[in-house]
Image (tube, rainbow, N blue to C red; front, side, top):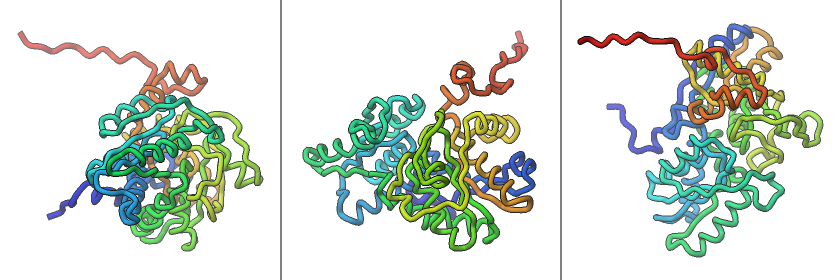
Length: 343
């Protein structure tokens, strides 16, 4: 009998799927790790689980306690679901600019939601810094205490990928993997997988959206963030604790105009509905494939489902307003289907 003991036991061991068009266009085998198949439908379930387990092991998170976090959405969903399965409450601070779908899912998962104006990290009211102060305040009043998850600078996040994601990729490819590519939000996924696979000779690449500053830092030594992106949950302007000691072998800056057609084609031609960050990742994987040359095997992360961003990513009016490409199938009126009722 094949069963899981609880929700936490169902996190990880996600399959790799060959991305047909990306592979054919580059002459490499490009594989996507299907992190949308985690219980909370994103890669962030892994970090959430390890952060909670670490806090419990340290005695910081007590039975009935509260988890507080500042997040663009997916980490909060993971914390809320894993937390609920273990008897913890969750309070999530989120920038008000994030998709309505993620806000709705956070509430559905039982989280208490605090929305704050979007602000840069240096602003004391940035959602991450706000969440830290809120956690400190709630720790004084909650009967069972409260902790700050601190995904950006809590290396339990990175450790999740050192212990699970990286080894899974190595096992699933029988050790025949040449490259790994991912964008950075907190840095846990990319740096954690790098710690597991770089020593084995796997080339690690950063795919950085426009508006983020890490590509500039790793290529010039200076933080610079030209442009903007509609992607959510990725893009970083500092070296978080999860990124400390990490250096990519390759780095790419990816525009929305390059990534979004990949997302749209993937849905239309291969039946995979993923978010914008997955498009950035796949575009980065295709760039790495061209740099390495034909015949290599490259793995990237399919971070979450695209329906979590439906009101933006698959909204023709929103895309046109941003000057972004709109696929013909998304913009045309649905064809008339005849009625076939019987009298």
